[in-house]
Length: 119
Image 1 (cartoon, rainbow, N blue to C red):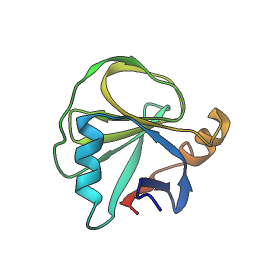
Image 2 (cartoon, rainbow, N blue to C red):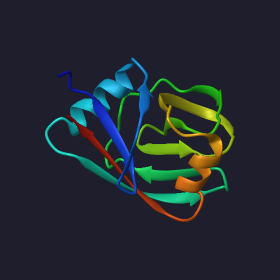
Image 3 (cartoon, one colour):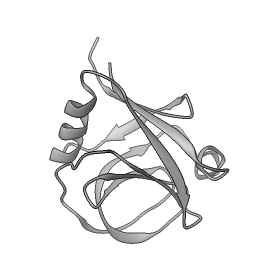
Image 4 (spheres, rainbow, N blue to C red):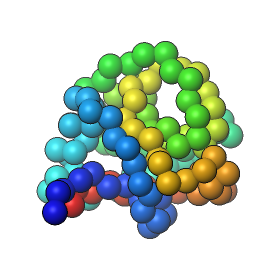
């Protein structure tokens, strides 16, 4: 069985199509020995934001987001969207098994806990 990077939101695992870039490689390395839990906070009515506790490589570009996008902000903030925004981010991946409405249900009701792990 192939190992992969996993993500859960409030203990509900979601399927993610991860980007093939240096940021995701560094994130994978970060969680390769133990899971990383990120306390996320609502921001702007369209996203959850939480500190990774470390800086990752970044390659920011102007991006218009949509529900399900997982991005890196300022090199050390994990951002998961349930709405849209336009800003300079580094793309990390996209949740593929949740609709926009389901992402809003997962993320829009208050602060959440996100866990990332390698398995």
